[in-house]
Image 1: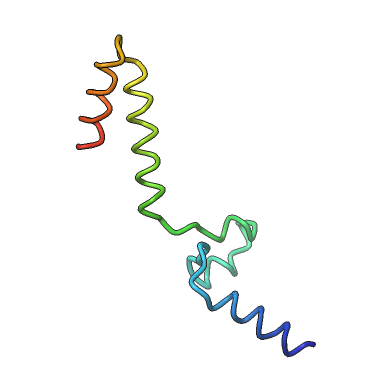
Image 2: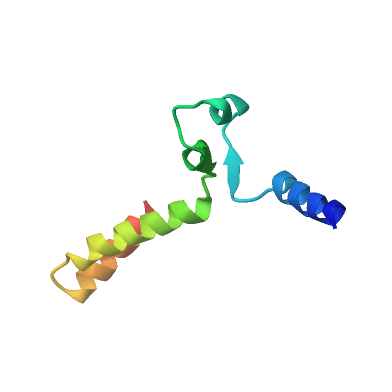
Length: 78
């Protein structure tokens, strides 16, 4: 049972998960709590979603639906 648990834990630690340690020195640093020592890798999907939300907000401030659609399209192209 201990071997299986060890294999599972090692697999999780060595897999390419969404969390990555910044460096060993940051983990040993006593100033930060452990959950702030882990950082989420930058994901292109999250950048797209942020841009999409920003463009939607910009388009929602238009006077008409047509102008809002134009604003959204030009914002997403840039």
